[in-house]
Amino acid sequence: MKQQKLIAALLCAVSTFAVAQDSLDEVVVTAARSEQRLTQTLLHTSVISQRDIQASGAVDVPSLLKSMAGVEIYQSGGVGKQSSLFMRGSNSSHTLILLDGVRINSATTGATAIDQLMLDQVERIEVVRGNVSSLYGSEAIGGVIQIFTKRGKGKSSFNGSIGAGSHNAQRASAGFGGSVASSTFNVQVSKYKTDGVSAINPALATNVNPDKDGYDNTSASVNVGIDFNADHHASISLFETTGDAQFDNAGSFANAADVHSGRSKLSKRSLESVNRFADFWESRLTFAQGMDDYQSFLNGVHGSTLKTTNDMLTWQNKLQVGGNNVLIAGLEKLKQQIASDNTVYTLTNRTDDSMFAAYTGDYNKQQVQLNLRSDKYSDFGTANTWLLGYGVEVMEAWRVTANISTAFKTPTFNDMHAPASWGSNPNLKPERSRNSELGAHFAKVGHHFDAVYFDNRIRDLIVYQYPSTVNLGEAHIEGMELAYTGQYDNTGVRLAFTKQNPRDAQTGQALLRRAKNFSSVSITRQVGALKVGGEWRHSGEREDVDINTFARTTLAAYDVANLTTNYALSKYLELLVRVDNLFGRDYMLAHGYNTLGRVVYVGLSYQP
Image 1: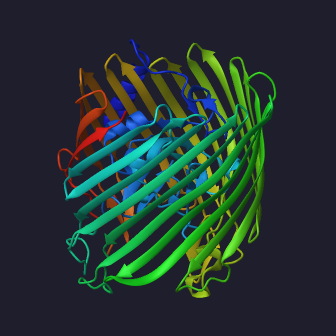
Image 2: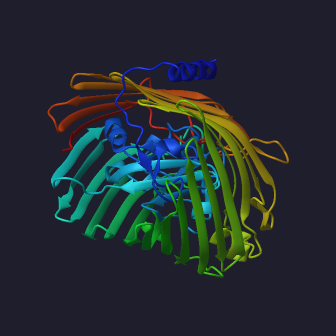
Image 3: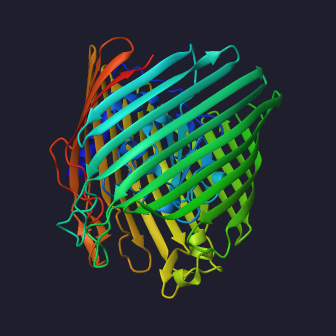
């Protein structure tokens, strides 16, 4: 019944129009590897803007992604704890996370520690759903999420914020940026600390240390850009975040007195040169390094270190081939290196040499997109991917889109090159996917609606089958996403609904921790200097593994309400009060792990 009411609200919203202030000219870059208007993308794309981030008062990237259509997130015990992201029901390693275009994932686990990315460093987020390996290579089976750090613009100015909340949470950030002559710059530092709660519920698991599991994060970013003239530009970008998190262990071999902790460090460095050699030709040369460095501790004593370094060299050329038609062609080299102080891998580095091309054509009321990419890995061989998309305006403000595409996910170093006792298999093939989708889209000033049906089949899944890891099985995920944003005078509405069926294609068994239905509704109202917002999130039942017996169990459906209030004390100074889980609902995202309960946060920010 709740889902039916939400669909009715969506359809009602896109058929009702009022005076609105939002623009249709918002530009995104992730869906085609070049600039496009959001209303012209052929892949289902959403944007979390700086305005959204500031108004939310949320702390970390996972907090905002939870409300997006097609995106599910679980976090094992609160802010800073291990998170998994499931996009369109695919595995947590099937979504590519980019930070300013740079990979920061672990090559041993295949995942990206998005739980370490604090929003005080973030300018905007672009979410592209569906197979995008034909643009970016491995991992992009469920989609791509690109996170952009803050850039300088306009008159040089300071920004800052402070705040405190439940569980002794403390938050502060400061930055300075702007434009000087032909240069732009921005420097941002932030700090977040909380006592947290016990990650695992002692009532549900054995031998658990019931103490609070805290988290402490320090982040910094630097971005500098120089315009030599109208045709030549260079930039340098630096980012680093370090998070210290305590966590719990449980089970018959655990010690309830032990204190487990881990230190996660993500960093990114990039140097880029953008040169227009002719009116029709823009060249972009980028050297970048992304790093994931994790250290574990037991009772304060160092246990192990596991480090991934991703070195990337990309040469991308953008050619204007007539009117609004664009051809992208490029070469990319990725070198992945791992280092471990207590695990002997049979191989510690590999390379990927790739070529890619993408054509986007705008023919009055019709759009086409064609992507081709070939990746050649040194340890398993070649993976070729492609995408063909088409869109047509069928009536005023309405478009219909369709696309079919392929994607792949490379085996990790743990899968292929770990010790034989782990079950590694050097003969593994990459996981491969074929996705098809059909969408209807509406865009008018102040209103944006997307309805997309998708069907994704993933084969050669990498699974452990004693005594070795093998390519076995197939997943089939089909579903529908509905998303709407609208502005009615001083009232904003944001709705998202996802219905999906992620399952093992051979057994029909549901994939773990993924709901068949989940949704969110957000409404904000501006009254003079006061802005009040409420959000409701719903998730249906999900299957999981019992923390004690490892047998399958079912997690109950849940509903969570959040409340946000912003009050402008002056043109640049704002007071924020945010209450998460307003009614104190008790629910689980992963079996045996606690969520935070009701959380109150009060903050003060200065944003010129």
